[in-house]
View (cartoon, one colour):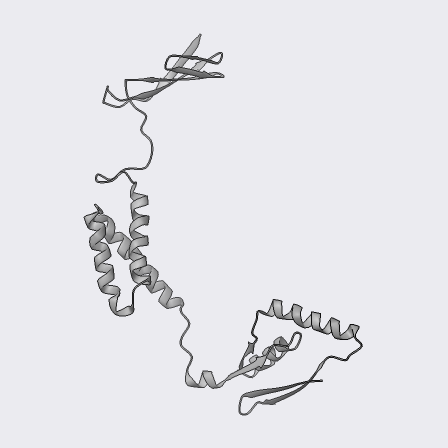
Length: 211
């Protein structure tokens, strides 16, 4: 026994349609498949319409085509020398048009890329001046000391950067391991630090001498 089901049709009688009805038990007979209380049957009456809208010249959806065009045009800008950007961009746009991408799709993609570039230019920090470069001090990284000196330099308008061959986390482990080894052997390990701050000239000098 089956209850009335629902069928979604369109104007074409030659297309497939998914007929959904309610069944009391599981069974499979011909083109009808019943699972639990649901049954499905294919019939040449119509078709359920689903999915993203397709473009006339492609099986891809409009969203996929926009993504492909954006990636291709952005790569032409990123992977080209500054004096070849315009030529590479035009060639890439020409290739997309030859592949079936209409101008009505490429135009909004180009506008989106232009907005991205303008927004990135606004977020870019200004280039440092010669005076800013003079207010720069480079210190060797010493765990527990360098960051304190960076705060002192910031109060006086001096940018303090650290020089270290490796990342701070890995270098600290090496330093701590060395200190532990020296302590086991009964040796003294440490630093004598002299700091000279000239507020008038905005200079910061640090002298570190290992003991």
